Every structure is written in C-alpha cells, then in structure tokens.
Length: 405
Image (cartoon, rainbow, N blue to C red; front, top):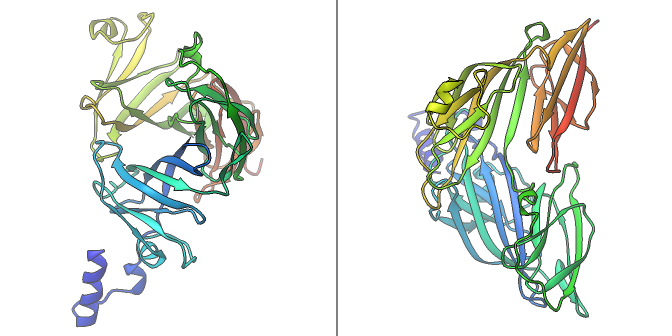
C-alpha cells in the first residue's frame, strides 16, 4: 500500500509519470484451499472454521479472505503455515480489497485482510495461510427436534465437516469419506472434483456411546481431501519418450530434512532441481544409485543395483512449522510414453490426488481413459487435469494425433 501512495504522490508532483494501469495491484490469486468445519454445541448455530489457503500472486504482501454474508464471525486468528507464527490481520471493506487485487464489484462485501509473513516469492512462490474463526449461522446449522442439521453450499473443493462429540451420522448428501477423530468425533471429508459447488446437507443425532478407539484399519483411513501433493507433466515430443515435470509436497514431520523420489523401473531421470516455495530458496539435491542408497541409510525398501533415488535436502522441520517444496525433473520412459504409428500414447498410473498432463505443441487430444478437466493454454498446448478423490491409483491412458494429420 505504501508503494501505491508514493507513486500517486510522485505523479501529483510531476516527478514521475506513471500510467494508471501501472498503479493497479495484480489480481489476487490463490490455490490449495481446504476448509474444516467443526460443529460446536447443538442449538448454538456456531461452528469453528479452520481454513488453509495459499496466496500465490508474486510480490503480494496481503491476502484477503471474504467474510460470508449471513454469518457472524468471531474468535478470528491467523497463522503463517510455514512457521506456525501468528500473522497480523484486520477487517476491511471492498474498496481496500479491490485496491489489494481482489476482483469483486460487491461494495457490501467485507474481508479479513492478512499481512503475509513475507511478500510472495516470484516464479511460483507461495504464501501459506491458516485462518481460524468461528461462524454463527442459523440458516446453515440448526436443530430439528433431536436431529442436528448442517446444510451449506461449499465452493471450496476440499472440505471436512466434524460432528459434535456424542453424535452419529444419519445422512450425508455428498459422497465422502467417513472418518472418526482420535477424540471419538465423527466427520465427513470430501474432494469435490466437479466445477459446481457441493450442496452439502448432513444430519446427525445423539448416540449413547461412541468410544474414541483407534480403528484396526487405521492405516487405510488417511484423509484424502487434506492431501495437497500435486504433479504436472509437460510432455516433450513423443519420439523422445521424455517429459518434464514438477511436483509439490508439504513436509510437517518434525526433524525431517529430506524428500526421496524413487525413480520408477524403466525410467531414467535428469535435470533435477528444487526450491522452497515459502521462501524461494533453491534446495540442494543428489542422485544416488544402488549401494550408495544403502550407505546413505535412506529409508528406501528393497534396494537393488538398479535402484535410483533423487534426494532433495532442506532445513530440518521444527515443531509447529512446515516446509512446502517444489521439485523439478526430466524423465525418459519408452514404455509408458511413446509414439505408436502416428499416435501419441501416454500410459501411466497416478497415485496423487491432483495430477495434470500437458500435451506437446502441435498435438490434438483424441482419447482420455479417465475423466479430466481439459483446457488450452495460452501457447496452444492442451492440458488435462485429473482429480482423484479416492485413496487409490488411477490408470491414465491418453492418446493424441498431430494437428493437421
């Protein structure tokens, strides 16, 4: 904001001529949003919201979060997810938000304005924020006799709703995981992979006893919606069998200082590099093979002479902190990416929830075995985005033909 004021003052004094467009703040952009609703005492109409979001407009010093109309917000606090430390914030109107890059013409809208721990780094950097607040909304959370009702259209794609302790789930309108919390509370969690809002209505009632017992199947009950591992493949021309990629990962385990990327059998890796998205810092890396993996005492199972792993190193994670890293690599795989006659063939399984494939220039998409959101990039290349809300792999087969063939 001080930069805007200085430029305007200079323009008035005639010292510097600045075109009006140059004064405009770049539009606010964000990603990786996840919302957790914890329903408070039945009949109170109150629920706690824990909202994770990433600001990714390069250079942005603030992030603006709209306060939903019809809800009364209290008990707000904001934290930097990289350090776990509190962030400064206040509540502002639409004029200030628009000046800060928010594109919204509703003059009655109010926002939580968060001062980021540092300006968002360039070249894909991020400012990761956690907003903790309590909403009171009688239209969204109410009682019908002894039945609890939570009904709310949710525009954020990744969500969890947690029942009050001592309540059992009767119904949920949106396909979801049902996951019991360590303290015995039951919740639903889902990743909405449609372009529309999720019309969520859930009902619950008191239950005599619901013990907080760890399930014998706990190893298979990881919350998919809270995972935020993403990967984007940029296919080179199919004759090369090569593709560039980057994948993002958040590490929050205290003391962890490495990320291991095991190279699939039949693939070769080159050009690795990595950066800390929170700070923009370039990270150290090395490629180890066979016995070198064992000597480094890395947690890689079933090491053979052909085993290969890329090791990315970063500062050990401290209590309350997390590190968001982006890793870049080039792979060659003649089995899973090839040219069959005149047809490009990509045949690869994806285990992450969010995956994207960008076709090489000059190719027209002809088949995709798994549903995807398809878009055309500014340079004319076709991009396919796959969201897998299930905790399993998807076998993606893509074919394409040369444009004009």
